Image (cartoon, rainbow, N blue to C red; front, top):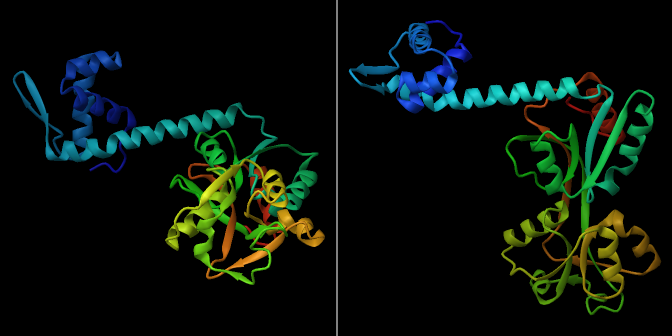
Amino acid sequence: MNELIDLYQLRIFVAVARHLSFTKAAEELYISQPTVSLQVKNLEESLGTKLFLRSPGQIALTPAGEALLAQAEEILSSSARLRDLVERAKRRDPARVQVGVSTSAMLSVLAAVAGTVEQYRERSRIDVKLANSGSLQEALLENRLDFAVLSGPVDSSQLNTEELCQEELILVVSPQHRWASVGRLPLRELSQEVLLVREVGAGSRAVVDQVLRKKRITTPRLLELSDQAALARGVTLNIGPGILPRRAVECHLASGLVREVAVEGVHFTLPVQLAYHQDKLFRPLEREIISTLFQFCERPSSQ
């Protein structure tokens, strides 16, 4: 048995298996029927087994043919994705790197991203896209970004991740709010107030939802805001309590505009991580940039 499988033969086999017809497969692929028959025969010889049962006027897959078909379409699809990745890489400016940074993670890695951009500004053009984690994950899956710094859980199995740091989320209220003088807030109280949170798709929102589900807390009434500044402003105006990264409200806490409230039995932690497509082939410059980013975040890179 030959260990190598010819993708051309595999593509012909899939067409024949789909139509259960050598003639229709030939028409689909714009090749002659004898060529189809010959390539299927060569593939069978290479694998050492029959893939089709042939009888006058009809063909059917053998068990070996069915097993091969189950994997062949995935192999051809992966091959097409790899070709697309290579073509995209060929067309791209070799000195241009496209990076995504989620809005929830931005405060945690602002110095790291700024320092990295400054270090490489003479050698490359680093384009930074700021959006919520959900939008950036979609861009990574569509190969519109080289890599991204995301906050919160990453949902897709097609994305690889490496942790950069952890960000603490805290519950804050206006000094006029009834919780402002509470030492520790019972967890069940969260369901009794309108809670200010980020929109669905934001990393911090995913963490809050995940913790509340795990603790079996009835989903509180939520007021969604699309950026941290608006959320912090809403808290200072006493519209409701909010859950925010500590870094986002450090100045508000220091000036007394908001107060931190500890919640019994809960610690909101926002993971900040590097994410990239599992099929991503890093260019040398990208590896350097990622290594520098990890150095700024005080963690060695595995890249």
